[in-house]
Amino acid sequence: MAMLPLVLHWFFIEWYSGKKSSSALLQHVTALLECSVAALVTLLLSDPAGSLHIRSCPVKKLSDWYTMLYNPSPDYITTVHCTHEAVYPLYTIVFIYYAFCLVLMMLLRPLLVKKIACGLGRSDRFKSIYAALYFFPILTVLQAVGGGLLYYAFPYIILVLSLVTLAVYMSASEVEFFKDLLVRKKRLVVLFSHWLLHAYGIISISKLDKLEQDLPLLALVPAPALFYLMTAKYTEPSRILSEGGNGH
Image 1 (cartoon, rainbow, N blue to C red):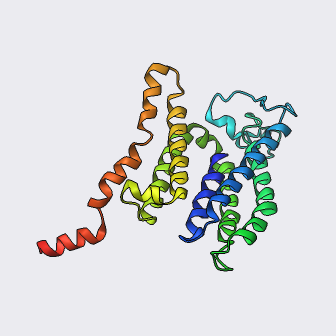
Image 2: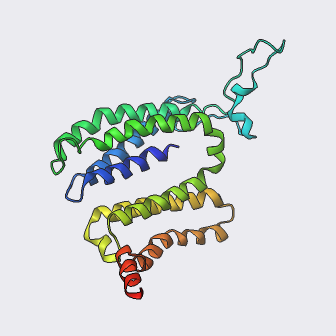
Image 3: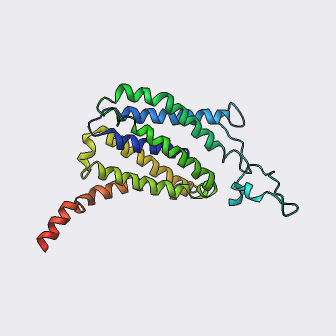
């Protein structure tokens, strides 16, 4: 949940930056800075304060995340709201982190975009910021409702989302050959960022319990991008239509 804002920032910055904009890379770095500082401040404010460690209660079962559903009703009529966060601070720390991310974004990004996004129109340059104002409330509701489920399923979600966003980006950028990636450095940055997400998902699933068995799995990180590059030319819509027309 801490990585999702950064991934979405990068996605919408890339989506709205335009092909001729040279400001996207700096915006990517700024988004990384915002999320990193927000994470650092959140950890320093959490118990124990001033430390990067977290003192947390162990998670034993899914219901530990939803203690509010287990408030007692002694007389079967009146509900006593006395439960606390059993997995403290794993549930609420995400909300604190989102608040710092939002504050830092509103302080830094508008000034940066106004100065450097010269290649975009006046209405387009702030669209990545507007997108964040939409996805932060959505992520907040997602954490509030599905925090427990996400705790157990996040490695698989990271892998699936990173694969989908990589495919969407490469398709939208019309990347069909490896040389298309080398034309613009920004594309390589996006590719390496997705590879980091792939690696993180694989490590989260395997937990590196057995290094000699799990480390070779990291060799699969470039596989989706290589598969896309090898098969993109065969799935080009114009080629399929032309071959279908000739066959007909």
